[in-house]
Structures are given as C-alpha cells and as structure tokens.
Image (cartoon, rainbow, N blue to C red):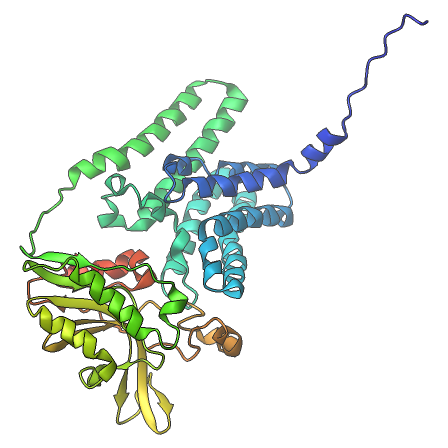
Amino acid sequence: MSGRMHLARPDLTSFNNMKRFSNLFTAIACGLLLFAAWPVSPLTPLIFFAWVPLLWLEEKVKSRKKFLGLTYVTMFVWNVSTTWWIWNASAPGAVAAFVANSFLMCLPWLGYKVTKKWLGQNIGYISLLAFWICFEWIHLNDWGLSWPWLTLGNVFATHPEWVQWYEFTGTSGGSLWVMSSNLLVFILIKEYRANGRSSAYFKWMGSWLVLLLIPAVLLNRLISVKKNPVSTTNIVVVQPNIDPYEKVSTGSFEEQLNKLIVSAEKQINAETGLIIWPETALYMPNGINEGEMKQNFLLNPFWAFLQRHPQASLFTGIESFRVFEKPTASSQEYNGFHFESYNGAVLIDSSGPSAFYHKSMLVPGVETLPWFLKFLGKWFDKFGGTTAGYTRQAERTVLNEKHGYRIAPAICYESIYGDFMRRYVKNGANLIV
C-alpha cells in the first residue's frame, strides 16, 4: 500500500456560481432591507442604511445597462413585498403597478450613475438626493399615475414622534433624511475599507450621528403641540368586517346597511355627537341620487336610524351622483340625462344631508385614467372600476358639523397626500376623518 495521502481538491463550481450571482443577491438584499424597514415592521431604523447595497452595486458595476437591471430587481422586490395586497383587488392591475412603478423608481438611480461618471463623485452624490426628491415630488403630485405609497418619508408612519417637523417639510424632509443617511453610511464604509479608523472616518461617523439625532430629537423638542378641545360629545366609529366584493354585489345593500346600523346602536349613547361609517357604506349599483336621498325607499331604515338619534350627526361614505339640466365640463350623458358620478361622503342627520364631499385624488386605472392612457379604457374597465371616471372636487372644503367638529374628509389613499390634507387644516379643520 502506498503511504501517500490524497488531499481532496475543493470543488470551486458552487463558489464560482455564487460569485457569478453575487450582484443579483445584493440587489435582492437591498429590496428586502427596504421591505423589512417598511411599516408596520418594528425594524424602521434599517431604512437609514437599506440603500447601501445598491450604492455599492453602482460603484462596482460599470455597465449602465447591468446596473439598471439590478436596480430594477431591487425596486421590484420592494414594490411586490410591500404592496402585494393590490393583487386582492386586481391581478392585472397589480402586475401593471409593480412593473411600471419599479421602472419609474429606477430613473433617479440611472441619472445618478450618469452624473457621477461625467461630473465626479461628489456632484454624483448630490445629484442622487436631487433626482430622488424630484422623482418623489412628481410621483406624489397628481400627474395621472400618482402612486406615492413608497415615498421614503412615509417609512416613519409608525413613529410620528420622530418626525413632528414634517409640519414644515412634509414627507420630502423625511426622504432627504433617509437618503442622506444612506450616503453617509456608504462613505463611512468606503473610508474604513480604504484607511481604517482614520480621522476622516471619525469625522464621517460624527456627521452621521448628528444627522440622525438632530431631526429625531432636537427639532421635535422645538415644536410645541397645541391641544385644542373640540367638543364634549363622543364619536362612534363603525368599521364592520365586510368583504369588499360582497359589499358592492347586487342585492346586498339592505344586509350591509343593517350591519352598520346594528353595530352603531350598540355604542351610541346620549353623549354621542358624531357617528362615522366607512367608504361606500351607502352603496347601490347605480349610485344614490344626492338630490333625492329622502325619496329613496331603500334608505327608509337609514332615516329611521337617524330619527332614533336626532342629537347625532353621521358622516359616511357614499357612492352618489347628481343630475344636471345642462351638460357640465365633467358630466356624462345617459338617455338624455346629464350627470356626474362620485366616490363621495356625506354629513347628514335626521333632518337631511348638510354637506357632501367628492373624492379628489382618484386611484389611477380604477377610478380614473390619465389622458395619455385613454386608449386602454376597455382593458381598465375589466378592473371593476369606471373608465369614464368620477368627478373630482377641486376645493379643500371643511365640513361644519353641528357639535363643533370641522371635518377634513379623506377617502382611501387621499390620506397619504400630506400637502393635500394640510390645506384642510389651513381652512380650519379640527378633525381628520
């Protein structure tokens, strides 16, 4: 027998495969970090360095096409993992949202890579901040396909105590805070790899800590919260667990209305001043005529409920329409009648409706189509919405309730438009519903 030892040669195939896909894994990891930081996760602080893997990829990958592809992977993972619930409403709509929004979110990063190459590293870093904030501003404002769910400043939704200064900056301030932090962490890592714990390293470390502490601690202490009692009455909020597809199915209105009434009456007492029902709580397949609510016999149980509680006001969502003698700029025509349809809300009591609100920020594809996508109307109609679109309300009108509540209405995703809601408060609102 030979006394020689045979050492097994390591199989480098798996290692080489891992190395080949390392960039892809890094892009996926970046998307997962963003997801892990997003509400309602308790890991919000991850957002302060979640973009670092993508910054690292930009430095490593020279090809703009490859970097664009890897950036798209990050954005797609982030979009799907955080807004997967769109699928419950419409599978085609969800796919369209994931694909389109992921691509749009790549554009600031592509601009950053080009700028950095031609104008240098420092200008490149500044350009990333500028491009991202500009992109969010365009995507936030209603350009027809507004989809601001993933505005970075929204990441602090479960920590409002960190961002009371949004009063002055809006969510853009939070986005700038997040992106600046990620850039500083990336610079820190680069400095450490190049020179270890140098004086420059500690300078950047100090800058990062100051950046984190000033907005989260010092600025909030400078802002005093005003407490302004509105009313001594109480509010009953009713949100029954109703499948949204059952809610809008034919023949279910009476059953849903009964659920709302029974749930509300379990909580109403002599001190109840305001009752709040959810979006489209009053829904009929053909809508409800705002001018003839008392003549609608299907609403008789509704009026009986209000008459049993004459001291209270009700603020409820309603699918409604108005009929006009002559056509208006936004009216539709059917059998000689001119009408506008609304996803709306009504403030009402036993004497009748006192004010209506018509949703202004409409959901793209389902409630409205921008002019440049009108040719897709028949396809979008399959989403279950209306291709003709609802009519919007232009003004931020506060609804004055008899017990002193000055209501700022927000239907569906209107609530995530900060400046939109701020205009209600500027107009005297003291209650956001």
